[in-house]
Length: 120
Image (tube, rainbow, N blue to C red):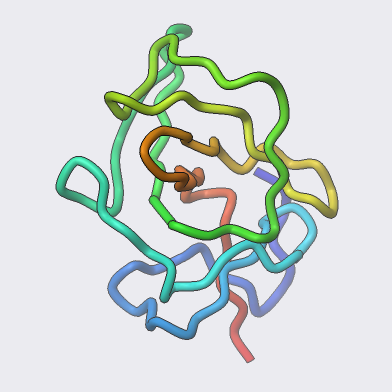
């Protein structure tokens, strides 16, 4: 993970309010907000792994205007039944932030350690 600047902190779900903004850990670009948190498969946060065995802690949001999806949707090895995924990167610096899931609706599964909260 890129170095965090002073005053930045990894997200703390217990302290996250609806109005809290979440930023890219790589460049500080606004990614999403606490009010857009959603549950999928019964929870907001999931520990998952990819076919290479890399483990991720992802948090789900219904909106993430600070990300851009790339590639064609894939249903292979999806963590959410009925949803295809696309890679989601920061629109500012290109850091891989997670995935955009497309099915009956659209949501984002973002890597928790790649999001930060700023302390004012």
